[in-house]
Length: 144
Image (cartoon, rainbow, N blue to C red; front, side, top):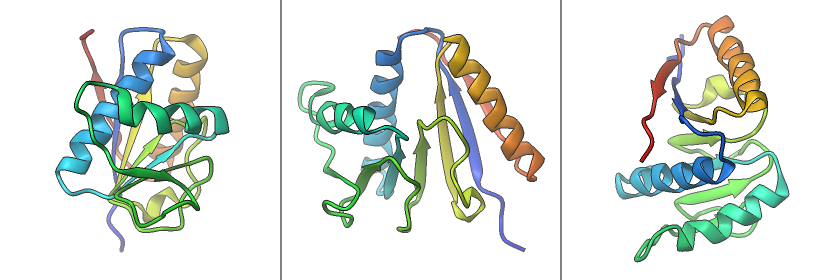
């Protein structure tokens, strides 16, 4: 039997979408420095474009080599609106729903704000994972 993925819900104490994007960039940078292949599932072209820019600029001196899906899929970090068909070590899910075939992944990170819709969708994803046998972990993050 295949091992269940590690799933972490990072719950921010703010409603700001910008804080979610910044945390995504920081988590991506940390994973990249640890040698992980990362896929950021945005579910939305505008968010893909915003993160594509932010990964270069989120802090002075940041360098996270990345590409959008279909552009250069061999980069250590790839962003896209649809679940990846490539092998990754970490999927950061910013989309509204559980990614298709999530059971095939080894690690998933969910980043949630206190915005009511974000919380409700996160609860649905939490139930989706749990109902399929995963044991998601919840991390409430203090403001920076």
